Image (cartoon, rainbow, N blue to C red; front, side, top):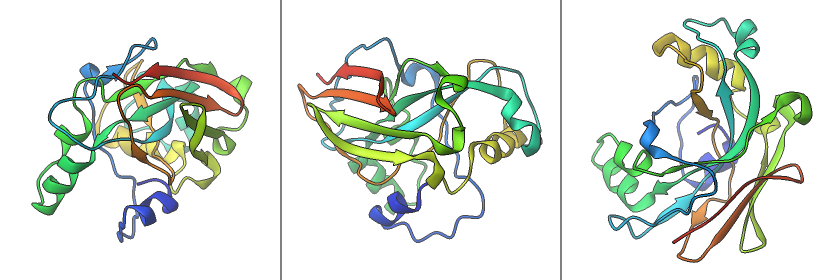
Length: 197
């Protein structure tokens, strides 16, 4: 919920005053270009393309003005969501981790140094499926910039080296299907590529 355009497309009417946080375990990670297998418990798996920041120092109660010291690399990731499960759980007011944090639901690309990317608050990124651009965004449209997210999350959780922060998705989410080929880009640099099985 970190892009107003996505909140609108998902019909979220919340007036957000602080970041929305949820967690995925390490078993959610899908890396090294390995294929994503559509799970049998959902008939509506959606991609959500996001800029991902890797934490590279231990931190707790980090002041926002110092947050930029805690990361130096970024990539593109996919937050896979079982939309049918999420909708059902939300309607009942129940936690929805099983729709977001299931095994292999966090695809992650190759990290590149921020020094090669430029200002973290002005990063263009996009996703192509089968050679067609399906989603694009720019971090300049974040509701909450990454330094605020780092500071906020560190109030509740000790941030450790290697922790990953997915920073939210812009509008344009949609379903994936067997045999889809996904490619994620920062600018024109491809950092993520894998197939759906």
